Image (cartoon, rainbow, N blue to C red):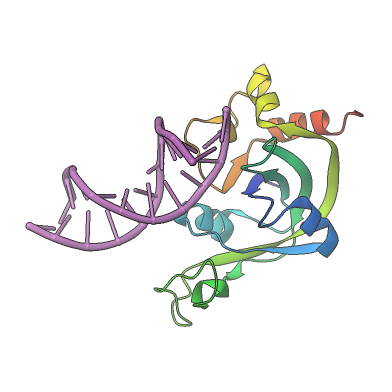
Length: 154
DNA sequence: GCCAACGTTGGC
DNA sequence: GCCAACGTTGGC
């Protein structure tokens, strides 16, 4: 099993949305590296840290799991979509999405600052300068540490 | 295939 | 809202 961090501004998709819907399609990814993670490296059951970016504070706020195979992100073909890509069409959908299932909301969100100040989490991609990937692989050890921090009672 | 210009991301 | 850092685009 692999571990991932999915980043989104909460005004687009938040842990509230994911909990409410139970299953959330993760659409709107328009970066080839992030797309290729979905296409080739993810499997059903992989665990996903849900991260709120551009937030107060930006933080890992919950846990989900991959619950579908990758499939076409048709919002790319919709001229009215915020995520429209004029190069995408049914013969060449270009972009991919995947479904995640809500598992848990963390009692203690793990903020960027907490990750940055934890000596054992210094390899996490999310704190790397200039890191903008919206889908990032996470090491198993880092995943366990983040979950342990997040599940502490406040 | 280089690389400058541009648009976007996202922390602050 | 600012702006550093990055990915993408397109002229050459």
